[in-house]
Amino acid sequence: MPVSAELKMLKFLQERVNKETKQVEALGAASKAQQGDYDQVSRKQSRVKSLMRRLAEKLGEQDAGEEGK
Image (cartoon, rainbow, N blue to C red; front, side):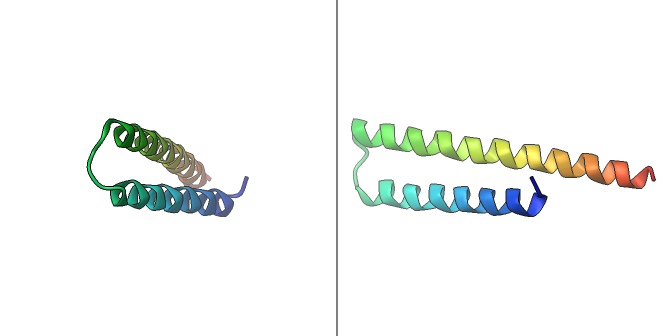
């Protein structure tokens, strides 16, 4: 998959997490049900972070390979 496509996907995922975070915050006081919503958004954010880290590593490997040419 091209890097540009991966970046677009990550941007979309991050925007979705941001939107969901705002929705959860708009609900008000922290109830047990809301805590579950926060946990779910947190897991999604962790996933985006992991995907971004892998992409950064991939780009680093590409740069290292190009320097060796």
